[in-house]
Amino acid sequence: MKLQVNHLQLRRQKQILENVSFEAAAGEILLILGPSGSGKSSLLRCLNRLDAVDSGEVLIDGKRSDSLEVTQLRRKVGMVFQVPALLAGTVRANIQLGPSLNDQTLEESRCRHLLEQIGLPPETLERKAETLSLGEKQRVALAQALANQPEILLLDEPTSALDPTAVLTIENLVKRVHHDLKMTTLWVTHDLNQALRFNTTTLVMVEGRVLARGNIQELMQDMGNDTLKRFFEGRLSTGSSMETHGGIHEH
Image (tube, rainbow, N blue to C red; front, side, top):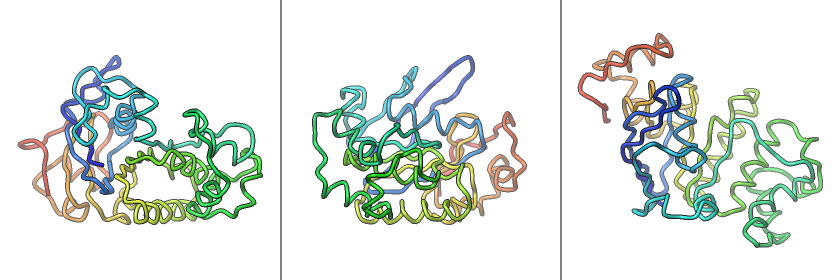
């Protein structure tokens, strides 16, 4: 499912998003990379209508997202947060939550299949969510999102709180799920090494604006944009002046 974002503006005491426009092709993994405070998480929240934009539009296969009921939108556009927010109770109850809110029943076979997709054994269904490790909780949060069979998946720094081994586990898991389901996937990160491991189309954001878009390897070779160069060299702090030298750089 194609995602198109046109001229998003969001202001809360200060400008959060400024004229953000981009496209994600159906079935594409798009990395959104930038320093802390660059508006990446706010962008995802706007895509899922957790925050309302001041102006601009989000199109899903050509249809404005604000023309859909919120529940319908969130079935189409799933989201996994930085810190998994699971409810007290069993893993089964957490996975079944989304479909139950839509008056649907998640069959036992489907629950087990979702656990298989996230690499956890079937007996995990009966475990209490609070007994899981943080990495396991994040996997269950992913299964929770997948239970609604979304066509677009938003991942808001899902590995930033995890240890290095769990980081790689979640990355590989998402790559495998994406390969199997061909979902349009947006992954927000501030970790350049993570972006390099994905080695895919990357949107670089700074101070609420899109600075550049292209393959991460090619972007790193672009020395014509001083702000981009400083970011890749680790010399760009929040609040730095943004000089795009002609606008968004495409590769």
